[in-house]
Amino acid sequence: MNSKMEFSSNDFDDALNWLKKSGIIENNIGGVNGGFDLKRKRHNFYYFEITGYAINLFLSLYRQNFDVQCLRMAEKSGQFLLRYQCKEKSRCLGAFPHILEHEGNLSDKYYSFDTAVCTSALTDLYEITKDRKYLDGAIAAGKWLLGYAQNSNGSFKAVYDLSKKRFINLVRWDGDNGCLHAKNALSLIKLGQVTNYNEFLKGGKAVLDWVLRLQNRDGSFKSYKGSSNVFTHAHCYATEGLLFGYNVFRNETYLKSAIQASDWLLNVQNNDGSLYKFYYRFMIPNIKVVDATAQSCRIWAILHKMLGNQKYLSAIDRSVEFIRKMKYKRADRNYGSYYYGCTSLFGQNIRSSMIYTWPVFFVIQAYQFHRLSKSTPSTVLTRYLF
Image (cartoon, rainbow, N blue to C red; front, side, top):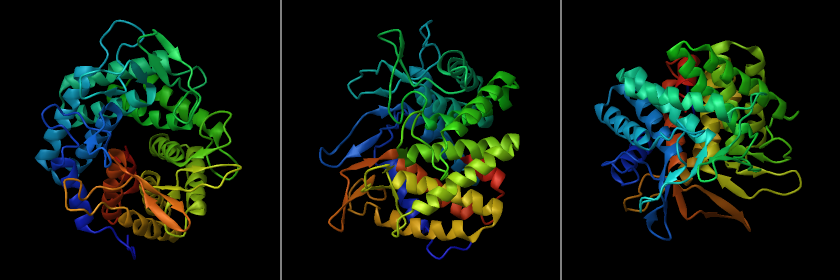
């Protein structure tokens, strides 16, 4: 994969060092902070979804170079997840909470998307370590996803409120019937493959079949049923889910949809290589984000390897240039991380005051895919997606 504007090994090493040494991951307990507030100069809270992503990332790095430290960090975070997994014998059994505040207050909100991410992480941990406790945790979470969170048409309810003992209605991009839930398929499919339990596979396929209804003619995905907006981060989640589904089921409809979604990203990419956070029907977007831009690089790397089309490589070239401009370069503990994004105002790009953890994860894996795709099949790259 020969690219004009490549990620450098320094970019990769700097970001990985930030994860390992900055305190964004609490090494004593394994919990991962959602981000660092540059104005308040502090971490926000432990975020369970992001802890799941950290596990997936460290395990993918371990598979690549057998870095034992990466495996140990993944295991520590896996134990953190299991410690806070809901064990109450109720409609919440097996789910994962949204956040844990540093003061010890545990959220009473349990998101189906967060739980799916944690399910994927625990399944991957079991596959590598063969430690049964990780599989048991993943199965409990998977049963909650199938038994309570997934609707009969394949879509997902978003949030269970433990204090109210019921699912609550949430109408926004991360709410009920959101396209982001197509990525829940990764967790269910992985779990189905490991356990040979067909219901998990059926649940993963059902959400992929359902999300096709949210795709617009131009290839974009509505943020949720009834929305006219596209939230690019969630659009990428849906695309990733379909690519993963195609990788397993070889359903050409999934691949066609994923290509259309990927080409939409290419068509709306800004001249500086960035992607906007939202694309509105009646408003001009102005917030450029690193997370969706790095996610797009991962998607384009897979499709370039799969289809050999140079346009995807050219798109990556442009995005790498934007991502590198968003690198945090001050000589302090956050060196090597990335700003969440920037706002375009009067021709200037004003950077955000937040460093969120997940965009850095996506940047690291975009670099990893960029390097591995020279010798790694698209099937393997897709399996690494988180």
